[in-house]
Length: 219
Image 1 (tube, rainbow, N blue to C red):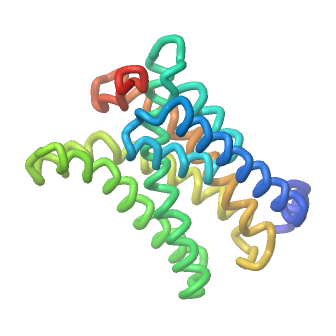
Image 2 (cartoon, rainbow, N blue to C red; image 1 turned 180 degrees about the horizontal axis):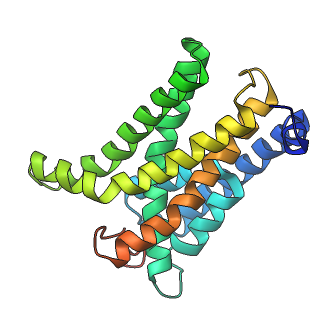
């Protein structure tokens, strides 16, 4: 595949530097707001928001301000869905980045096997981030596994299929020491978040997922 304009644009070192600066700034804003205005949020949701912003920078921060603070004017299906997809996204993001580092950086696997490893780890971490709290609340293991599989599989599959597909399209031939590798990763992560959002809207609307509780209720 010949490089296109978007490949050339994403290959610029200054763009990666700018993105990292914006992401760092957004993380600082998020942490300050969590400490000053939303310290009441459960530790897990704070962790979710930190990972969401770390992976998606300004987009992640916008999702937090729209759906994750007690200051939201009223809770809606749209806001519940954003909290739900952020929860899924944080776990999948850990697995995806870890999978890429292991598959590409450590094992030097080709794109096909790297995609398989990345998908499996993303699914595992996304699954675990929902399963763990259910087990802590006392749910039987078998029932918790079943409920997690039903509620999370569609969201994870859409998220990872999108993220991995776009990541391969944009940075499939890039090496880890090239800016394109990392800019393609960040673009693909955010694309996965966006793609999985309507899936979460549908799952919550149909009662398959309960959605995350309102931050106003935790205050």
